[in-house]
Image (cartoon, rainbow, N blue to C red; front, side, top):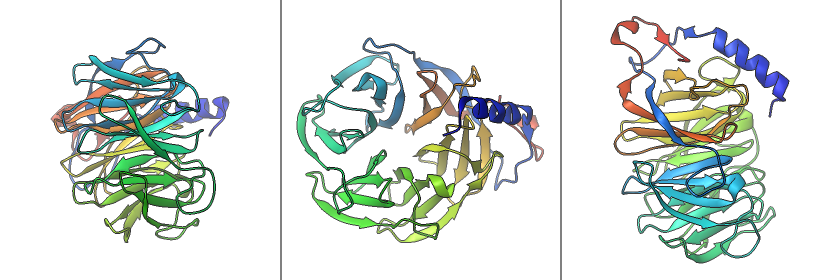
Length: 328
């Protein structure tokens, strides 16, 4: 993580480059800002340190409200529907809940980072089971943050410190794992988050290798993109990843305060600053998009969640003569 003074310098450099020529496969516009979806606070319905997010089949948003040690569920209008958790080590309690995912039956899975475990809950937030502990062995975790439910209803965990992805069934039984630590194709250096499409293809944020890696449902490497840097398509601190139904891949970078949009082949389509206030403390982390193109970005630094519309251009069509206007 960059120091505050370093982040301020990076922010200044990025904001000066407000118009960037981006080679793209086709013209795409950054999603249009709609509104601030959730504000900072500790009362139910407010967030503090929001991190991972997900969308269920009904279009409801689940938020890992990290600093408040809880999970919150909102409908698409922002109405609070469910809150559960609390700081602690007991069943149903959390210490730094980092990510959340929901399966086809509505069961909720939480990556309880500092307690080094996955916890499973019913749709109403009732504790069901837990698994995981600190270590190097299969089924153990070291700094795991991201998790996702695949179309097979199995749970995939980005096991950062061990440089691998682990696959569990809904009861916590280990089914498979892939990846080792390293810089080569199919290897990881701090895999931080992952997203899985309806066909089971997997996209993994390989943070310290500064790239996104794409795999088949069986963990076979397909391709990768990204390098270290501050320009669109380059990264310093990759934080979150999400997919939409139109074949877009969205990636956030916390230090650059930026979100990028790609196609599945890694062609950069758009890049923008997903924090309307553009403050030096901004740190976009979690990202989620629903079936209607509503894109949510959790800003851990300013304790807010921002809502965007991917179906609405944030700039005019006349702006697309080979130049994309970025960082609104």
